[in-house]
Image 1 (cartoon, rainbow, N blue to C red):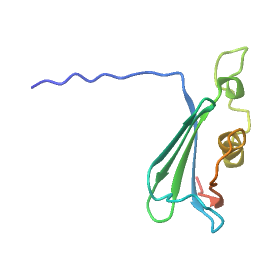
Image 2 (image 1 turned 90 degrees about the vertical axis):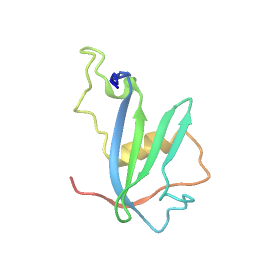
Image 3 (image 1 turned 60 degrees about the vertical axis):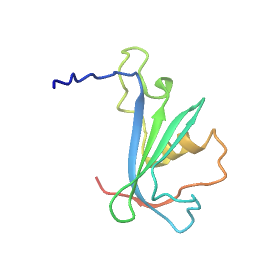
Length: 105
Protein backbone atom coordinates (compact mmCIF):
# COMPACT_ATOMS: atom_id res chain seq x y z
CA UNK A 1 0.00 0.00 0.00
CA UNK A 2 1.36 3.40 -0.97
CA UNK A 3 0.54 6.52 0.94
CA UNK A 4 0.85 10.01 -0.46
CA UNK A 5 2.24 12.67 1.79
CA UNK A 6 0.53 16.00 1.54
CA UNK A 7 1.40 19.25 3.21
CA UNK A 8 -0.66 22.33 3.80
CA UNK A 9 1.01 25.71 3.88
CA UNK A 10 -0.58 28.52 5.83
CA UNK A 11 0.29 32.14 6.32
CA UNK A 12 0.34 31.80 10.09
CA UNK A 13 3.17 33.18 12.17
CA UNK A 14 3.66 31.75 15.65
CA UNK A 15 5.78 32.77 18.62
CA UNK A 16 6.97 30.02 20.95
CA UNK A 17 8.30 30.12 24.51
CA UNK A 18 9.18 27.36 26.98
CA UNK A 19 8.72 28.12 30.67
CA UNK A 20 8.06 26.71 34.13
CA UNK A 21 4.75 27.96 35.59
CA UNK A 22 4.88 29.85 38.87
CA UNK A 23 2.78 29.28 41.97
CA UNK A 24 0.46 32.15 40.91
CA UNK A 25 -0.70 30.21 37.86
CA UNK A 26 -4.38 29.38 38.21
CA UNK A 27 -4.84 27.66 34.86
CA UNK A 28 -6.94 24.55 35.72
CA UNK A 29 -4.69 21.81 34.34
CA UNK A 30 -1.69 22.98 32.36
CA UNK A 31 -0.45 19.38 32.22
CA UNK A 32 -3.02 18.76 29.42
CA UNK A 33 -2.76 20.03 25.86
CA UNK A 34 -4.92 23.12 25.49
CA UNK A 35 -5.82 25.13 22.41
CA UNK A 36 -7.61 28.47 22.75
CA UNK A 37 -9.08 29.95 19.58
CA UNK A 38 -10.73 33.33 19.10
CA UNK A 39 -11.28 35.93 16.41
CA UNK A 40 -7.99 37.47 17.54
CA UNK A 41 -5.94 34.33 16.90
CA UNK A 42 -4.99 31.15 18.68
CA UNK A 43 -2.86 30.05 21.61
CA UNK A 44 -1.71 26.59 22.60
CA UNK A 45 -0.35 25.21 25.86
CA UNK A 46 1.61 21.97 25.43
CA UNK A 47 3.06 20.16 28.47
CA UNK A 48 6.71 19.13 28.29
CA UNK A 49 9.01 17.08 30.46
CA UNK A 50 9.08 17.80 34.17
CA UNK A 51 7.12 20.94 35.01
CA UNK A 52 7.90 22.74 31.76
CA UNK A 53 5.26 24.10 29.38
CA UNK A 54 5.60 25.14 25.75
CA UNK A 55 3.36 28.10 24.88
CA UNK A 56 2.49 28.92 21.26
CA UNK A 57 0.93 32.24 20.29
CA UNK A 58 -0.36 33.10 16.82
CA UNK A 59 0.86 36.55 15.80
CA UNK A 60 -0.76 39.10 13.51
CA UNK A 61 1.07 39.84 10.26
CA UNK A 62 0.85 43.56 10.94
CA UNK A 63 2.82 43.05 14.16
CA UNK A 64 5.73 41.08 12.70
CA UNK A 65 5.96 41.63 8.94
CA UNK A 66 7.86 44.56 7.43
CA UNK A 67 5.41 46.11 4.96
CA UNK A 68 8.26 47.26 2.72
CA UNK A 69 9.77 43.82 2.20
CA UNK A 70 6.87 41.52 3.04
CA UNK A 71 9.24 39.51 5.23
CA UNK A 72 9.33 38.93 8.98
CA UNK A 73 11.10 41.81 10.73
CA UNK A 74 13.51 40.05 13.09
CA UNK A 75 14.37 43.36 14.75
CA UNK A 76 10.95 43.59 16.44
CA UNK A 77 10.90 42.65 20.11
CA UNK A 78 8.86 39.49 20.57
CA UNK A 79 10.26 38.01 23.76
CA UNK A 80 8.24 35.95 26.26
CA UNK A 81 6.60 39.00 27.87
CA UNK A 82 5.37 40.28 24.51
CA UNK A 83 3.98 36.85 23.55
CA UNK A 84 1.98 36.67 26.77
CA UNK A 85 0.77 40.25 26.27
CA UNK A 86 -0.40 39.43 22.73
CA UNK A 87 -2.08 36.22 23.86
CA UNK A 88 -3.74 37.43 27.01
CA UNK A 89 -3.90 41.20 26.61
CA UNK A 90 -6.82 41.67 24.21
CA UNK A 91 -8.72 38.61 25.43
CA UNK A 92 -10.25 38.22 28.86
CA UNK A 93 -9.61 34.88 30.52
CA UNK A 94 -10.81 33.61 33.84
CA UNK A 95 -7.40 31.92 34.18
CA UNK A 96 -3.83 33.00 33.63
CA UNK A 97 -0.43 31.40 33.17
CA UNK A 98 2.53 33.08 34.82
CA UNK A 99 6.08 31.90 34.61
CA UNK A 100 8.98 31.79 37.03
CA UNK A 101 11.57 32.41 34.34
CA UNK A 102 11.73 31.53 30.65
CA UNK A 103 13.82 28.48 29.91
CA UNK A 104 17.37 29.17 28.66
CA UNK A 105 17.93 28.88 24.90
